[in-house]
Amino acid sequence: MAHHSTPSSQKALMMELKSLQEQPVEGFRIGLVEESDLYNWEVAIFGPPNTLYEGGYFKSHIKFPIDYPYSPPTFRFLTKMWHPNIYENGDVCISILHPPVDDPQSGELPSERWNPTQNVRTILLSVISLLNEPNTFSPANVDASVMFRKWRDSKGKDKEYAEIIRKQVVSTVAEAERDGVKVPTTLAEYCVQTRVPSQDSSSDLLYDDLYDDDMEEEDEDEEEEDESDLESGGEAGGTSGGEGGVTTRCYNDDQEDSGNEDS
Image (cartoon, rainbow, N blue to C red):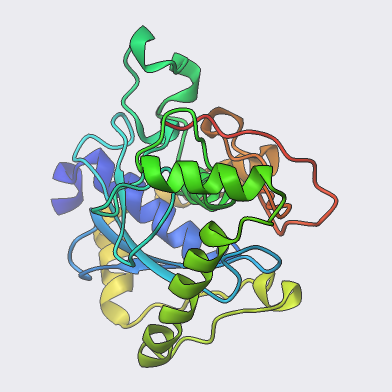
């Protein structure tokens, strides 16, 4: 039958997509760029309340390799971003997305890099944490890194960095309106999880093609594993809370700051 020749990566991605549709990560909208292509996802990130990114609507793509999850995907912002760890072309530079090779010159430990136990949830949580807590030791955008340090060290008195971010946030409002998206601006709205229904019956057919009935139990195990990863904070991926109190679930203002290991 057809599903016997389906790549394992495709099965893994379908399971993750199904899990994220049924149990979304707060602050994100997930979908496929094209319904027939499981290797290219579109992601919309909502800026967390009580941060510089509050009210923002940031679009991005995740592209997965054929040997996922043994190799990491790439994460690229389509929305123009001014950030120490985002390249001019939108590519995100973060340890969790770096291949698991031993590279002493990078300053990264192997445990900080990608490994097959990571998943889309830990990537999303790492990226939202990175937005609010950049790594300025090995920046992708040096000018943004210098500006961020001035803003941080002056405790907000040097406003140049904050003003650029806020302008970018405002510029995303029109796109959100075009897409018919209501961006959450309060903590209560941000924390609401919305189950995303299948767009049409073809999605159900795709599930049937990929899985036998005896794989349902495996699917449930995967969802439980994802929940466990979410609750543990994605330790291997640097998904700890950052400035503004972002945590792995809905953040709170009392969450202690801790660092990301990005480069």
